[in-house]
View 1 (cartoon, rainbow, N blue to C red):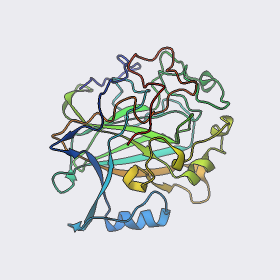
View 2 (cartoon, one colour):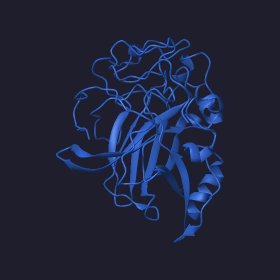
View 3 (cartoon, rainbow, N blue to C red):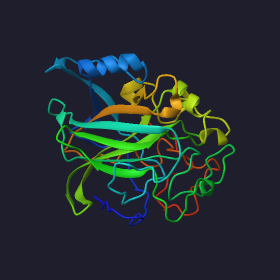
View 4 (cartoon, rainbow, N blue to C red):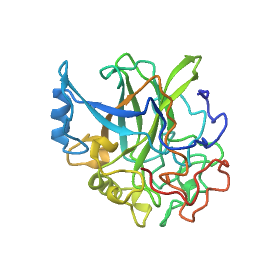
Length: 316
């Protein structure tokens, strides 16, 4: 497990070189699970977005539903993300509050306190911190026009440690898009490590996945500033190389607008991730599922050698 440090810069960069398909223990692939209480179901029904019908029996007033298997981490991962709730780092965009719950899928979907949940995603114009030489496709302003410094920025990356209920919350912005991917957020769940003096060391990666957004909501947001400055062909969910068209089971977030008639006010997104704490799963091979290589088919010039291959095929 890598170190996570508080500070202004990433300690080092790398693209994790993972091999093979989805890792499994005893033949069981790691999956996520969604717990839907009566209150959660009511909220999801009201938002009518990113929700799914329960597919498992209720336990103690909650329903535990299979969510998704691990997928590629993509080519834009950086090691050593910061431990922080607010990951915006000055980036402008529609506010997004993300609430993720980690549960033990092998033990009745009980909470996993102390799990380290890591997320990273692109900005409103499709740029990732640390990889700003990667062309997001279409026509987009230079990343530096948004006040970012390619060498120093760590925007839209961070960790949180799950509380006693297995919950983490992030303050971020609604991601933009880049060719050839749909709007998404990357996520990893780590367990077994220790948090000391602002760092998290040791342990293993139990889950590597991606979170997705309803097309109608995403495309409405992309008409707003600063998203509207990035023009071109947006990839919808049905055409994405990673999303499997299975709703919440494929990582589709439940979204609720902060203000019913004003999307610029922001959204609240939620999902529950089930893991097997005894199993390591770093996701499908970095060459599978694409993950969003630059549109010219080559990794950015400053990307580590483990970046995704331009000949990537769709993830299973």
